[in-house]
Amino acid sequence: MAVLARDIYRDLYEEPGPTFAEKFFLASKRLGIAVAGCALALGMLDFAGIHSIPGTSKFVQLSRAKLASFGAARGPAATNQAEVRVAIPVATVARPAPQQSPVLNSLAAARSEDAVTMAMTTKSIAPSVMAPLATVSQPAAVPAVAVPATTAATILPALSDIAAKSQASVPAEQEFKLASLPSPEIAPVSPMMLAPASASAPIAIPLSQVPLPRAAPPMSPADRLGLKDKEYARAQRCLANAIYFEARSEPIRGQMAVAQVVLNRAFSGFYPNDICGVVYQNANRHLACQFTFACDGKRKLITERGHWAVANRIAKQTLDGLIYVPEVAKSTHYHASYVHPNWVREMKKLVRFGVHSFYRPYAWGNGSEEPVWGSGATLAHVQKTAAR
Image (cartoon, rainbow, N blue to C red; front, top):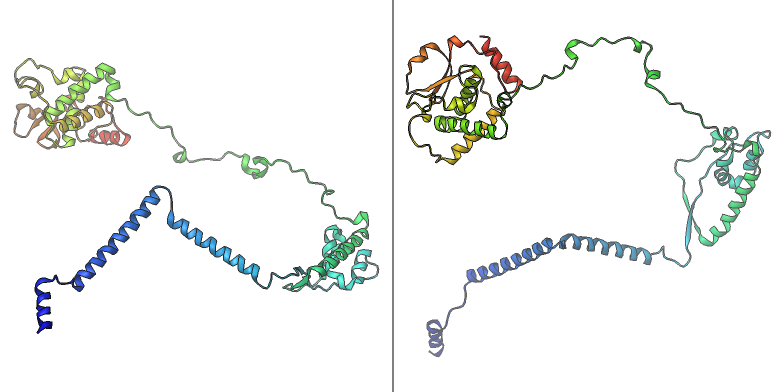
C-alpha cells in the first residue's frame, strides 16, 4: 500500500521527465547551435583574412614532412660510416691497332680503368681520335655501386691522377677546343633573298578583293540645321513637346515616326526650316495649326515623367542622326484613325503605327533629293523603297 501510495503521489504531484522525442529534439537543437557557432567563427576568421582551413591543411602537410624526414634520419641510412654512391658504367672498349694514337694505347692498357679514363678524357680528345671509339658497346642500364666514404677518399685521388696523365698524353695539336673554332659570320637575310625569281613580276589582285575607302557617314539633322548649344536645346525641347503631346501613348516606333515627320517638314522646303517653327506653325490660329496640341487652347502640363523622358530621348537621338524609320521615309503628314481629313485623297499612304497613318503628297514626289540620315543599311533600304 505504501509503494502504491508513493507512485500515485509521484504521478499526481511530481513533474514527469522528458520523453525520448523531447530529448532528441533538445540534442538536435544543441548540435545545430554548435554547428552554427563554428560556421560563424570560421566566417569571421575568413572575413578577417585568417584562412583557418588552408592553414590547418598546410600545418598537417608540414608535420607529415617533418615526421618523414625524422624517420629517414633515424633509419638504417643514418650510420656512423657515410656512404658515397659512384656510378661506374661497365664498358668494353675495342682494342685499337698499335699504330693508333698514344691515347688509345693508354686506354687499352689501363683495362680496369677503361671506362673511367674514357669518361675523364672525352672532352679533351680531338674528333679524329674519338672516331674509333664509336664501336664501344655500353649496357642499357648502369648499375650503381655503394662505396664507403673511406674507400671513396682513396679512389677519387687515383682517378684524378689517371685523368691528369691521360690529358698530358694528348698532343697539343689534337686537343679539341671549342673556343678556337671560327664562328661563321651570319649575314642578315632580307625578304628579297627569300622571294622566288618571279616575285618581281606584278601581281594582279581582283577588284572585288581590293579594300575600298569607307564612305563618310551622312550628316545628322542637327548638323544640317546648324543647331548648337542653346539652339540645339530649344529644338530638342520643341521636338520633345510634339512627341509627348501627339504620340506619348503610341508605340516607340510611332513616336519616332512623329519626330521624323517634323524633320522631314523642316527639310522639305514647304515649311519653316527650323524645328520650333515647324512644330508651332500657325499656333495663333485656334484649331487651324499644323499640330493640334499647339492651338487647342488647353494647358500643356507634363504629368507623366516616364513618357516625357522617352520623348526627350527620342528627340535627342533623332537630331543626332541615330534614329531613322525607313518605313516612314519622307512622310510629311499623319492623322489618327478616328479622324478622316479631306487631304488624304492627295496623299500616298506609306505606313501605319498605332493609331497614326503617315502620308506624303503625290505632288511632292518621293523626296529623293531631300536628306536622310542613319546607318548605311538604312540608307540602302530608303533608296530601294524610293525606287519603287
